[in-house]
Length: 162
Image (cartoon, rainbow, N blue to C red; front, side, top):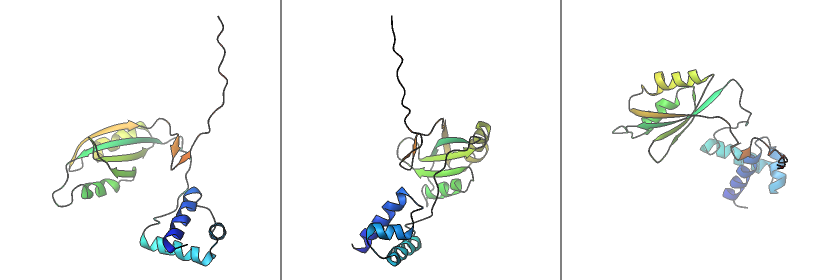
């Protein structure tokens, strides 16, 4: 197995389970554990692995929203400078440059609808270059990072008799 294939295989295993041990990765890929350790260290140094996280259930007291933002690109930096400023806000948990009517797609978290609305009104919409925003509140999340969050419920349909 070449180095690139080894790294790709390690990442595929870790995407399914980030808690998998180095020894288990080595056993599954039939390579020495030292090679796995070396590959992980190299991918971290290169920025291919940016961090490790746990996928958790949402806290009940949190309100999440998707905010679409239309921005006026800056002359020298385009969308990047504005996006980087917006990413510094603690409320922003994800940010993407997208195609379509809006330019940025943000995922924002707050303690209430009012917190999210306050963030949009006082922090986001007042940023230089922000032209407009559309806020969509998340009601229920079914799948994240390839993992179904709720198992399908089996139920029997009630029979209708006339």
